[in-house]
Image (cartoon, rainbow, N blue to C red; front, side, top):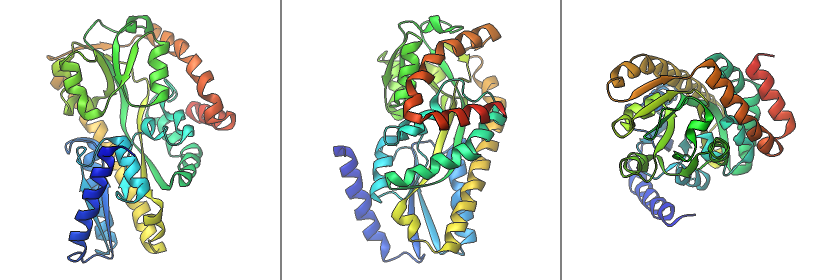
Length: 330
């Protein structure tokens, strides 16, 4: 556990003690995430909160701590495991540092479009992976997400894998993503989400990848020259709960939380579609926007195959094959 996580943990624990006397609800849970409040998933977290509190008749109270108030994604995962945070939506890329099978969701070009995404995340594959999280002291409830990720940088337009050669790309602290950019010839660097704008502005990194909502809300387009709409990976979040907190709930309230998580997931997807419809138009004068050609996409897919070979043993043959079949609709 990092020193920052320990400090934050003590602060959260102290806050919980101070507030416990005044709490009217039977259960009071902290929901932490790193997203700014105007992003689709942050707004969906509010939908989740409202659904839980309404449908539990006030028996559950949800306290949302957005915008990395309690630390970065890795720190929030650690705190959720310890029960200092109760609910979180960490990217599966970060969660893979705790559970190797989560490497699956960050394989490049696994899911081509929203329908393939839903088949993988909402079907048997997603359910199976959520079930593995109990070994990490987490109860997985649903797969959320922020849309497909795209690449931006300050060096040159990206139209094929070779164009990434030598570019210092910021990524999540995620082995799959780091390995992907190395395979493309880039120099990837893991960096906390809240540090990316300054990192790009100061030249510590020269490029990054994120879905459109994150690129817009964090204003990365202000410090980047080129964006290619690669849609190379769906930015998946696992909606999780501390296992002891989950087990403390009676069955009727577990149902309330589960149903609210699905409502929140669907809201996040609707908000994402709505936002993406106007984001590109809003930032068109700020950054060069490049559509990836069919030839360019094919070149990226081919360059990505070694990543599948590298991570297949960690994900498992059975799960990898099941996910590839689901993505294709087979």
